[in-house]
Image 1 (cartoon, one colour):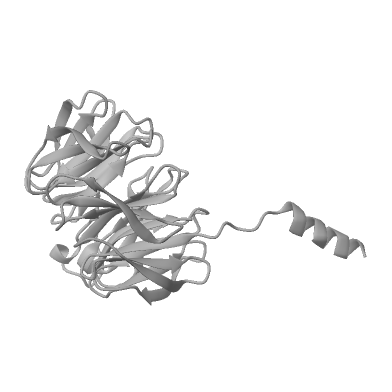
Image 2 (cartoon, helix red, strand yellow; image 1 turned 180 degrees about the horizontal axis):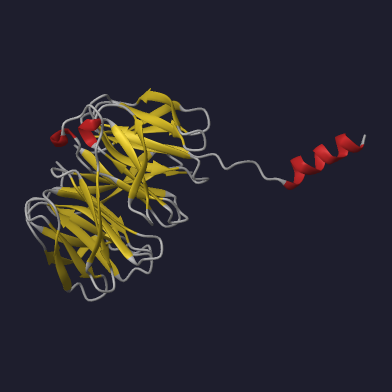
Length: 319
């Protein structure tokens, strides 16, 4: 009887794990795949605009914003209805963007116009632009909402923008063809991946000096086949996960020592990755194999690959 009572108390006092949904942009299908996290099954495909790539959740996690590169707009997907309920202007060829922590603005990289557009969500209008380098793509915003980072592929720079004044603070040189940027959890570092060189450069955000560089090597893969793209930081700030493109690997990096702990073999050409809420699972969107890979981080193994559509590019985990 005592054992039964104890079991009942555990069931009552310990809340069930929150159900999560994985959203994947399929740039060749013009859809966002909807995947149930706990069962790892494909549930639906939401029709969106042409060439969806970058995605982000609204602050209240009720809306998924999706950049439609060939339609020059941002679609607003109601997650409860699983359909597009609105559109925002984005500037030309939006590829990646970030939502400001205040929930009121988007900062969008316009690849064709060499600028960043600032979008007022409630007003559905562009309220400012910032000139940056050639072919801007990667976007990141500091947790305090003060600084926006934008990478420009052809210029091989990361640009720092004051989120309030929209002034360009600095331009920092990085390795060839920078793709993604990510601030550390404490805001003290900025990480920038470089696709062609297969590296990640780390900057001190206070001094803007380079403090580290991670070079990736995969046994059996030529140097030019190891291309660093998407970056995801763990909530505790101890680990960074970097997608290595045609090397078909995800690298797990120690953020203190800048060393690669291990590599995970996933599908073909992973672009971006996302961590589950409990930080126990990592999802990679694999562009060339049309699937996503589920990585069990506790057991350090890939547990499943799931077809989701043609050209999966971005991945976001939400309710």
